[in-house]
Each structure stands twice: as C-alpha cells, then as structure tokens.
Image (cartoon, rainbow, N blue to C red; front, side, top):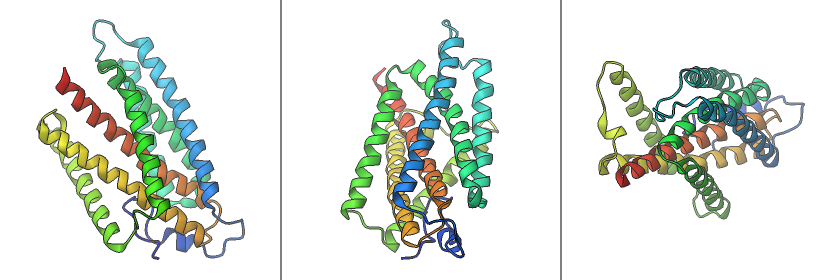
Length: 258
C-alpha cells in the first residue's frame, strides 16, 4: 500500500517511506503512537483549562457573550503559535518530539478560550461536543480495526477531494469576510448551514480512518521511532478539527431551539 496518500496535510510526500531509510534509533509502533497521542491530549486539556478559567474569571456579567480583552490575546497566541508549530512539524518531522507537545500547548490555549465562549452562550454545549468527538473517534477506530471500512485508492481520493474543497471554501469565506462580505450560509442556523456542518463533520470523521491507516502503514514500514510523535501530531490535527466542527454544528442546532 502506498504510504503517500492522505487528506491530512501532515501525512504526505512519502513521509513514512523517506523516514524509514537509515534509521538506527528504534522503529515506530502503533502503541507508541497511541501513547504519545494520549500525552498530547493531556497537554491540550491542561492548556485549555488555563484559558477556560481565565475567560470565566474575567467575563463581564452584563455582556457574557463578549470575549474579554485579555482572553483575546491568549486566543491569538494559541492560534498563531499553533499554526507556526504545525508548519514546522509538517516540514521537519525529525523535530516532532519537541514541536508536537508545543503545538498541543498552543492549541489548548486556543481551544480553551473558544470553548468557553461557546459555553457562555450555550451552557452544556462543550461537554456534548467533547463526548460526540470521542464517540466518533472510537466508532471510526472500531470500523477501521474491524475492516468494515477499508482504505482503498478510491476512498482516499474522495476524502482528499472533499477535504480540499472544504478548505478552499473556508479560505474564500475568510478572505471575503475581511472585506465585509458575510457568507451567511456557512455561519447561520439555517437548514442549509446545518446540512453543510453535518457534511464537514462526516468528512472530518472519515479523515480519522485515513490517519489510522497511515499510522498503521508507517509502523509496518518500520519508520523511525520519532515518527510516533509525528503520527500523534497528525492525529491530533484531525481530532481538533473534528471537535471544532462539532462545536459549530451543535451551536447551530442550539440556536434553532432558542
């Protein structure tokens, strides 16, 4: 099986095949990758708790839906720092043991603030989003491990194309938004917007299948041990995306009920 094809941008360009050459420092294993993914998840949770507490400690009771100024700074630090460390990790996998945990810290700061903002508007929403995210994760893992969903070339092509299309739409929305254009069908709570969010959640979930397969194939190819950190990083990228899309979907549904 070709190890080069994944819709996750951090898994590509022969990354496992190239890294497997000349390694003398142990080999990548699935269990090792799982352990490192768990560690990164704990880092994200602890960092998120920091901005979560700061948000609710600084929130204005008169305007509970407005993010406090000090929290906005932490949010920007998390978002920009996460992007920079993600790019460094993607282009320099050998540094993943150092950059992947740092990425988890930055993403935790960002997610804590964003989650608190959603929670302030819709109490209980965050716990539902977390539960659904992990529920989907374990369902996808079960489907992959049982062989119910097989990663074929056609499957990869469809998910890669869908993920690329979503990224393009989000990019266009961001750019036109800078000029005051409101792409309402992406952000309101209309049936169309909810349907789009359901589609995006489904594609994010199917990306987990590709990530599981890439990690398995990397272990089978006897990639070097530092690739466990790189594999964990790639899986966390997809998990964080899935969680954010769950927040968006649930908030739209909650808005319709209010």
